[in-house]
Image (cartoon, rainbow, N blue to C red; front, side, top):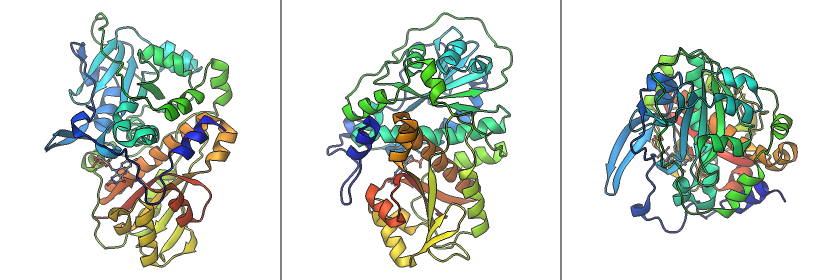
Length: 434
Ligand SMILES: Cc1cc2nc3c(=O)[nH]c(=O)nc-3n(C[C@H](O)[C@H](O)[C@H](O)COP(=O)(O)O)c2cc1C
């Protein structure tokens, strides 16, 4: 059996079960930011990547709790654990995005764009104005979700990418997402160890102004966090790594169509206002607007992988639609009475109230066996990431329309049963008026 499929089966959450580890000690909650010590600081305006990251992935608010501060970001992250870090390879060096300090910390003073282009077997990347690299830190999300935290890394990278791709397109940067690359080479460029922190995806951003500033010497940073180990996830990650340029070229499927360009100010306003909404007004959603939101979520992703996620919608309260299960074009597949549907959705969503109360829920699904048969274990990573991107678009798009939304965890088999499919749920998003 493939390591990815073994991982998937072992981390299914059964009905009545939980997705959390048994003991959560807030005293050991991981800090969701890097410690940059005395690193060189550069302003976010240093790179075209700066505005995209600060508006798409920055800190938007904070809350004090009995055990410390929670910083909320422009994208959703289960448990507010934020296991994803972002780097920008620029002409003035490799910069780490410090969301808390609202600046870049320089990790390396040399220009590593050509090295990343080689690792992605795509020479054109060397001319990108900046190459964003997202990494995952399993200890952060594993603290709460254990082995299932590996799924969360991809989901959270997806909600972050939804913002970053949309903003970069709005900035005219023609973002190109790359999920095929030589893992070891990218990790080496970033100086991360590939186990406690590893590269997830690259995003090439076009057009950079001339690099400002002098070439200051590199800092030695504490960038390789250690932490607990998650053997199933580590095995799935290693088995889905690509080892050389031929493997990258063999896996890659084109580069996808351009990201749709939306109005930047509307996007930024929605991202700043976004928060996970768990209380909805009882009013129905307007059908046409919901169809438009779904169309954005379904729109092409500018990526070197084929789409593998299908979305289905449970409609409890949408103008002009009977309650039931629909496809992403809002064609009804099955009528289900509203009471029964709400109860089943609430149960499948790990017995939570907000999916039950929402006007609609959108489920991201993939036939994981078929995905792995076609794309190997790396296809599993991409399925989870694609689900996160589509779920991220749904959340921001809901806020652009004045509605609320929230992602939710779920009992895997209950979702498949509810939707009448053999596909596995990757993620789900509740949507409703506030
Ligand atoms: C993949 C994923 C799963 C989530 N699951 C749940 C959930 O089951 N229940 C819930 O109330 N919130 C859930 N959330 C929302 C997070 O708790 C929320 O994003 C986080 O606390 C940050 O707050 P914010 O989204 O309001 O900025 C989920 C978020 C993501 C990205």
